[in-house]
Length: 256
Image (cartoon, rainbow, N blue to C red; front, side, top):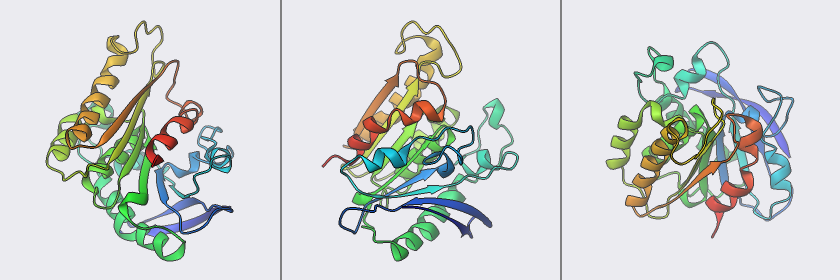
């Protein structure tokens, strides 16, 4: 069952639409998977570019039942970039963007999660709580995993924009208490903004994302956690190609 409802985040002084999938089968209570850019998860008609990840269809044919909470982003001007940016960045396209990522996570952890746990049949513990996203949402997911590891144990970060704040993110991870049961999935595609990649692991145009993902994953591994890196050959920066990874990151994050 898919539910669409508005939710007010006091931390952002804003209302955002939630896209919630509740299992119609299985025995409650259920784990919970939170996602950024929630409008791109389930229905093509809701997706920004007319193509969703197909997460509803995937979950309907998967034996692991869970509640999925997609949080729609701000669509006006640069508000999405602002709300999905944990720290200020010197990268040209983010220069001058106000970093409201921490306010966003404050709203998710201290406002939205208590609401979901109170109104749905959830397993509220960190071991049964995950977060995911793509691009800037992927950056937010790994930030959330590090900063709020006492509440979140798993993260899916597809084509994450970690390179925009590598140093600050890694400093956070170095100084965070990360549990050994933490699981992190990170991916990138060989066709994200360029063509003609000869070797997706070494070509400079692809290896920049690899190096950012590898360095981030290493922080989780150094803390005793588990990380998986995936290079999607021919993968683009698009919902269609991120949806093709569902069968990879969902089982990896939720395996017993």
